[in-house]
Length: 127
Image (cartoon, rainbow, N blue to C red; front, side, top):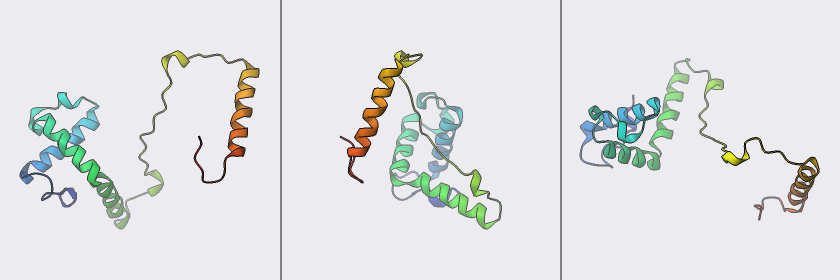
């Protein structure tokens, strides 16, 4: 089911290796390992990474996800309320951990933020 979504003719002369490279990308994200740690059975890690970057930029993974969801829905095997892909990460600087802000300072910051939101015209990005 994956092969129809891999752009065989567009990126490189080795279509017989595409499945191995795709499996290498899957290995990378399933294991959480570094690209350089990739087992040799998937090919050179640099090549697999380059394929990943090309496929990412070409929208291959988005098309594959949509097709898999559509096929599962067609078979009646999809509960679309469970489908969610999110890579959002909010990181704080290590110095921010346990930061204590005076309640008056916090109130003043919140008031300034509210005023800024009120002064901004709809559809206009913040300064």
